[in-house]
Length: 310
Image (cartoon, rainbow, N blue to C red; front, side):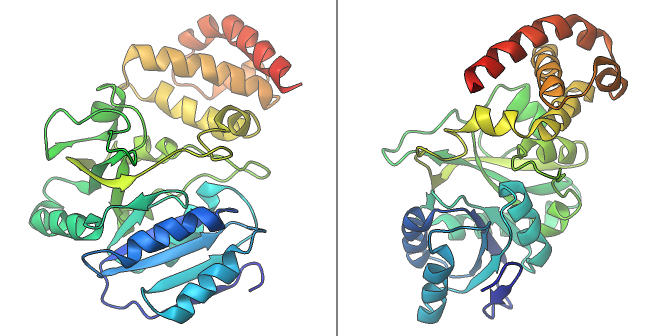
């Protein structure tokens, strides 16, 4: 397939789309594919968005599509980063629910069944409780939860209250109502290939809550060369996206002071990497006092990080 082309298998009637952005992850995707074939519930559609891979990802996915063991869709696009692949996929998904699953991770056998069971349970409460989706646990292949459990099972709250102020960090397994995801596309800056997902989650949390469920359905093992391993470099080379993320946290008065101070420091650092002057950077903030206080130490961090890049 050429850039910008797509191929979709028939998937009408399915409720869940599993969305996988992929960039040169042909080998690890085999494990994900195997886990999808083993699902106890087959009511899903797997959409792979190839973000300009050069390792034969397209050929492999086309082979799987020919086998017809699960329903698959494929989109190929020019390399632009995971967030741009998510935008491309979300625009095409017709299913009610979207489950974002990375190409180097995989699912437990009951993952789809579990997601749909909770969606059915809360179906009548979606509008009343203003739910945008469901948040499950991730764990490692040895069974350890990758960060922490939620305060209680089926805990309904927003991203800021639970994940930021509640200090429950790390990645989770999020399933969203597709129509709501479309309300909050990822901002795309030319030349930048990274945008943290929480830059969308924090905005979404101003309007919607999630059901937080203490059950692991997603298995992750961070790989060399993955986004987690190459995090700082990716962020430095995507400074406007990182400024946006920091600014969203800084301007949200629900966010605890400790986190806002940290984000203010990072905002100063990334503004320098973006080549944006003090006055312009300050002008985009609701409250400028923290920025004034953080600017000098932020420049010290900037110089240290820049030196490590050289």
